[in-house]
Amino acid sequence: MAVVVCPVSSLSLQGRRTGLRGLAPVRLLWEASVAVGIGLDNIRDVVVGLGTADPLRAAWLLALAGHLTGEDDLSRLGETVVRDNRVICGIQEGLSPGNPADLLVIDATSLAEAIALVPRGNAYLRISLRRRPS
Image (cartoon, rainbow, N blue to C red; front, top):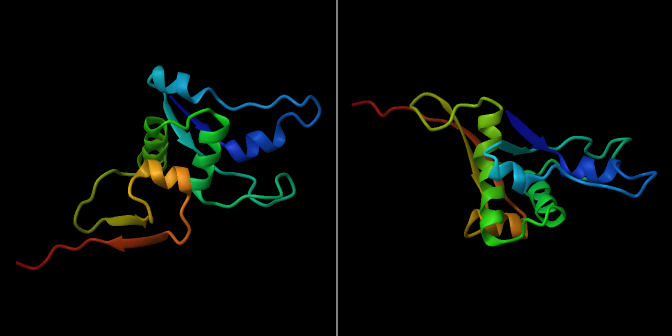
């Protein structure tokens, strides 16, 4: 089982009439060994008029609204962005010759820093690994 939290949509859509808003209890899910992903939907559309497709920004918002701002929490959210989301979506982990690879270059010293600061100018590259001829 996996739970994918969409903090931008959840916080934007909930509470329009009651004022009550919330997110899935991420810390409790982690403690129960439930796989957690961070999703994005309703990006600058008629439902939610703001947002970007940047998963670091979604993780930052989840950290802030979900009281997950400790260094360990930020690192765990970073792992969610770069690894757990892939696993939940069934995308192969690891690198093998000939397989496509995703490379995300983040201007940060750690995943925790990447979530805390959401640096600008990150680069995303899709590459294919090839074996060198012997």
